[in-house]
Image 1 (cartoon, rainbow, N blue to C red):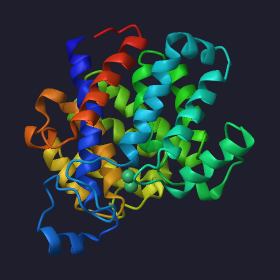
Image 2 (tube, rainbow, N blue to C red; image 1 turned 180 degrees about the vertical axis):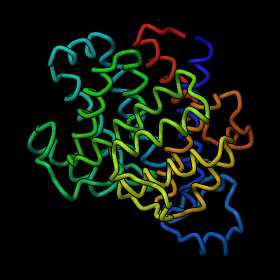
Image 3 (tube, rainbow, N blue to C red; image 1 turned 90 degrees about the horizontal axis):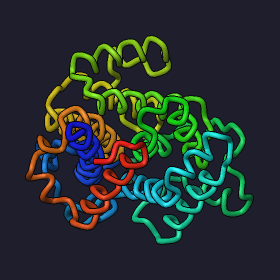
Length: 304
Ligand code: MN
Ligand code: MN
């Protein structure tokens, strides 16, 4: 039990760390990063969003919005969802609306479009859209994984429902379920070798995401994002090595950083996250992430 809490906390804090670290170099090319920083390895804020040191972006704050809605609904709302009641999904949509109205530091175009559609039409998903292949649904799915541990069907149902509020695209769906499944396995104790084996098999089953040879693209297109995340996650067992290599690839570095931080953080556990990074996170974010981790695990009956 303590192991699970340590790994879950490692995932959520690791995600916030990756977001804060990567945001400094978001939309930069690897060569520009090298010129400006040598190797970018410190949480210093700045970047195109002009962040304060340790500030996180939409990747973390949308996850917190999702986690908040799941905690508010609690186990009864999850049980109702399992029986086909979509009240919880509606509440998640409202949480995204509240998040949007609070003027977040950043909001992706597809997320904005989806949230506005939900506000105007009240629909829980838009039609299948070739333009919805961004990583915005994938990046915020961690709370759905924690809230459904041990419940395979509910994990898939909740992940797809929260994702489709803003993104309706088969590759977004596949990536959200795939990385969600990998996170579940890492929370259960999957090690580096197991992680490598799982990734090879998943990529064989989902050839759109094939990552050898690695093409070095790290854009917000969900295929580029997933390739970068899985490439560096399987290349480096060490949390810091994996995350530094990822964000120095630039482009959507806060999101690739958040996802590698999440997966590598689950693999190593919170106790082994680099303390110099942990110290830099804003205290209110650290507190919210810690509270949500405990609360979401408790929803599955795995009370920390
Ligand atoms: Mn972001
Ligand atoms: Mn981003």
